[in-house]
Amino acid sequence: MRIYREKDYDAMSRHAAAILAAEVIHRPDCVLGLATGSSPEGMYRYLADWNQKKFLSFREVRSVNLDEYKGLAPDHNQSYRYFMQDRFFNHIDILPENTRVPDGLAADAAAECAAYDAHIRALGGIDLQLLGIGRNGHIGFNEPSGDYVKGTHIVDLAPSTIEANARFFATPDDVPRQAFTMGIGCILSARKILLVASGADKAEAVYQAVCGPVAPHCPGAILQLHSNVVIVGDEAALGKLTAAGVSVCG
Ligand code: F6R
Image (tube, rainbow, N blue to C red; front, side, top):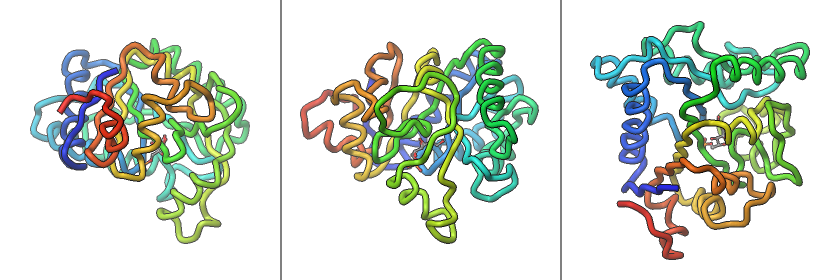
């Protein structure tokens, strides 16, 4: 695991964008596993800018997103499909048919999960999986629990996740209670993992992910078992790690 510390959110975003851009330049038809949320937004802005400047192209890239709220339509302004279109896909040259996000309105949720996993397999697996991390250590929407779930599945969102995400909705009651998420097995199958984290409220989760026991009560800690993980965080998010003397670059 390599950990890079950047001064602030903007520097973290630029560094993470450079890592993702390197993957796309090196392998133009790569399969990217993408994430939503505040953490990667700045990174997407850099990538869109570099795409518009023709430094790199997403024309052959295929993408699969980590998760989606159950019950939200793709055009709902808080759905993760909407987020991806609005923050990234609409600003780059990726082909719409090459992007996939779980269908939040799927009538048969189990069939949607199975189809999602089959799609990832048909793509040949994920080359680079981008992750954020929840304050409770979740990755994707794999919430702290007693078990790891391998494949894409429906999860009940933890109260702390509902609370954290309520900032995007009119009221906390509007936050969906369930979501589709890739499982831990899908995430670990990615050939490379890039985790971005910003802000002091992530310091504990990042510390536990890197140094804590590998157990499903902190889903992010499973990344310790993957052989190719890069974490890019700002000083605040890496604060507890550096205070504990864990060696980081930068
Ligand atoms: C989003 C996702 C989540 C977020 C996490 C952090 O697709 O899978 O695990 O990465 O909740 O969210 P932010 O970045 O908003 O703090």
